[in-house]
Image 1 (cartoon, helix red, strand yellow):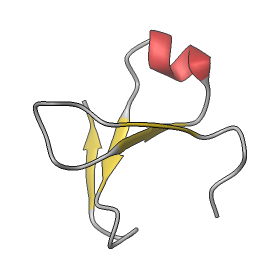
Image 2 (cartoon, rainbow, N blue to C red):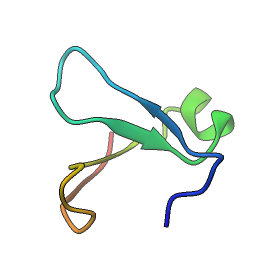
Image 3 (tube, rainbow, N blue to C red):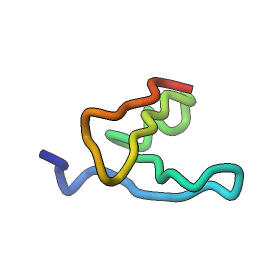
Image 4 (cartoon, helix red, strand yellow):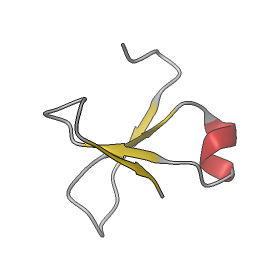
Length: 46
């Protein structure tokens, strides 16, 4: 499941929330976008 280290945030350009494993992934631009209602519905890395 989702760990306590997961950071949640939303972007104006999309209605879907993003989550990242840690700050390093965020700084490197490795962001995983998934729909909140379906963990199987992943758009992939941006």
